Length: 279
Length: 348
Picture 1 (cartoon, chains in turn purple, yellow):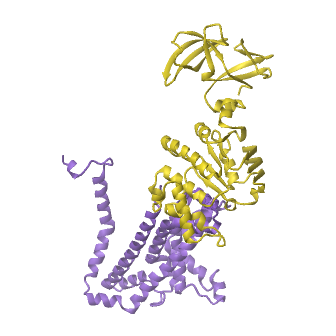
Picture 2 (picture 1 turned 60 degrees about the vertical axis):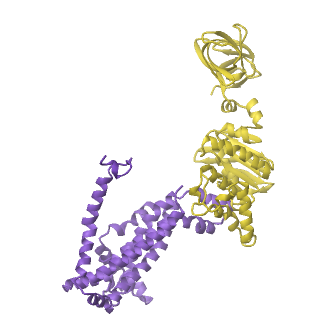
Picture 3 (picture 1 turned 90 degrees about the vertical axis):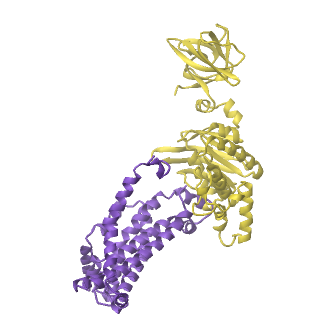
């Protein structure tokens, strides 16, 4: 009866094995490195920790990283939804190619993306030149960071919303139409609310990715302290100065902030999902 | 009145509807009955404005319906899989049609609440108004879908296999319920079904369809007792079908004359249709067929006998229904005679 005591017999055997592997793996890959990070930051006294965080340069770097990542995720949410709509709902020549192109930011080495974007938006670049005439500078400004973050975030929104939209029953749109709803009412009252959980997931993923993005951003950012220096870069700079405790302090704050934001989005998504469970 | 004239609808080279004409008078409850692929759902969707015909006319009370899309036709549509809005409560589902009306004619919130309450009372589900569709049973969902369709006071109510996704018992209950509901509100209704029992039990008139054409339109009694075509005879009710040869007004099975009238069917290969219970059993030599009883089963008020007919070179086994009081045993040699029968030219 050694197994029976653990509870009623399950029709899904293998809980012990899979749970054990899951815990071991998550510990080795995620939890232990993160714990190391926290331990390192405990080398600092609280006052030291606080003064590192509230230094102007750190605050600005965090503001740039989180603020621009949030803005980029919003843009990706809107544009990603439109792209998904076009890819799923219409048949047009080249649809499959566009569909594949969406994945490019996933696959491209971020440094390559950064170099490509920089040369494109530089003052002599294809897009940079016409924009410069309008007085808009993209490369080596915060705007460049924003562009890079949009670039790397777009597939997250598209790929999370796409399967949900494909599965959305065409009949509910027909039902809405037969009840007298015009197109706008059908989209705003029936389709978009059904997509909310997927949209929130896509948003959270795009945001998280943009906050942590390093490779593509540092090429285009210009990296001026307090103006266009992102938090991950500041961490690297502190590391190269052998100020490990400083680096980990910033990292811990980024970690906690990211976790809180993702947790909040997750709760929102749960709440939206309980209102729209599958039949 | 709904009038459908010469409707043609093709999907690629496949003709889903091939010159269909149909008139439905106000207040009727009509069933479109046919096997899958017969075009019945396509016809319903064209009437609703969810599909467009390649040719033909659809009019409601003389007004061209094809000039309007689904949202302007004031047609209530009930889907087989309910198509309820999952993120809305039952109340909001029913209220949807009222809330999306143009501002000029939209009811105020209090009037919408009263109307939704009336409809939920009508479908006897008032107590579920705060639930979400995922919390309801199939039968309840379908009744909510019906209430939602009725909210816009449709001029026509269209139901696409409304009970198709439900289990047999719920189906039976909802059938009777639908018929009494129709008597109560008397809205012109068309429903699609592949279940003949459903069609015969619920509808005032039945439209039998096959391969994109209407085979027969008639009352339930009519299509059962006087099938217009071989298809209707074999699709509705169970029939004994025998391949026969008509020669100068005489009917032959396997070269043997049957001594029954060909009913004016022209000479050539034909089929003889007899209902199982229309085969009279007599002493050998007295009827059109001779055969040996192979097997007898009794259930309820009838007994069903398998009879091997000796017809020309081979034997054909048919099943007939006889009253319980007629003594039958396997091994008996009997004579069978069709009390009522139909002969249709052609053998396929």
